[in-house]
Image 1 (cartoon, rainbow, N blue to C red):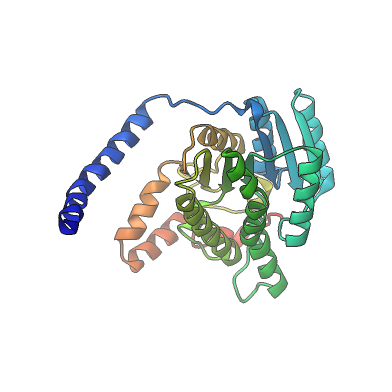
Image 2: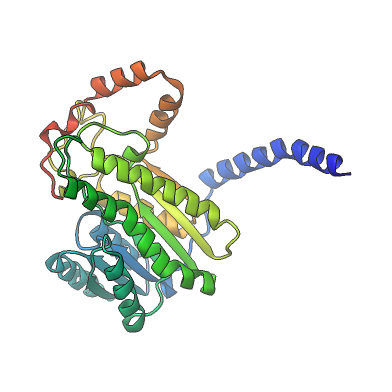
Length: 303
């Protein structure tokens, strides 16, 4: 009897995979039902500038009830908060270094008391030092891992339990295509983003049986912000930097449609496929030809 059950499952498995592919195709060509953000409290880490600032504006524009900003620079947080408030959306900010576990837990408690339960958590805070391993200061390497990777552990642990209790929540990670295809000169960033991707992949699978709670991981190509200022690819017209407004729009839409993974632009899927198929020597030639092998040589972005 047990053997027949296993055989039945084995025969149904290809059909299940086919149906999943069919649903994905239908989903791609049809307009999906979108989440109403009217009751949501959105927390964005690194929300004072760059992609975080545009995310705050986009969530507000799409009707979020409250937007909360976390970051390390009060001036930027205050400016963004005032800009959001002028649109009519309630906005708050708190100075918080997500790389500091105790600070995250403390500020999470303050946030809940002053604003309410966070239902959408956007882990956007990140730093990059843009150096090779041997040129990197040990403290700088630790800082990148604490903010880019471990910070997500602390923020998610702080807010996910309440989301599970409410059966209502969404965890978002603004990652990078460099988590899947690394480049020289940003070893701290690439490593942290690869760890972050694994974290989100595991978390997404772990929440499959949790009704009302989902995850979204966004993997954009080089985005035109001050963070990666000075980075140069060989063919900028063929591989132009992404507009941060577009990244924000696609991210919010992915949250509203409960899309698990978003690669920007979609052509980066080919890079992932090639990496799985081509030998290392061919991949090295692609890096040299595209200029990604030396693109960080002119890096002068902020950390």
